Length: 92
Image (cartoon, rainbow, N blue to C red; front, side, top):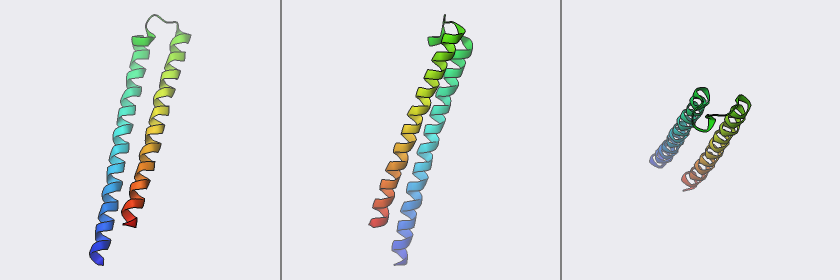
């Protein structure tokens, strides 16, 4: 009985750790995307090349919002998947 409790605890810990690692990796990727967008904006390169300041700012806001919305969706899906795994591991 004690061994099965230890196994369930270990599986839960392992799953939680994997979820945190995946979320941290997603966070870092999003952070790098936002940094890249910032530097493209500041150096007036890429999609910001040869645009007025108002247009550049509008592009920055739209691109930043798209990156953040995508990240939020990825986090939500990762957490939902983690919950499904938790339910399966504790019910077994």
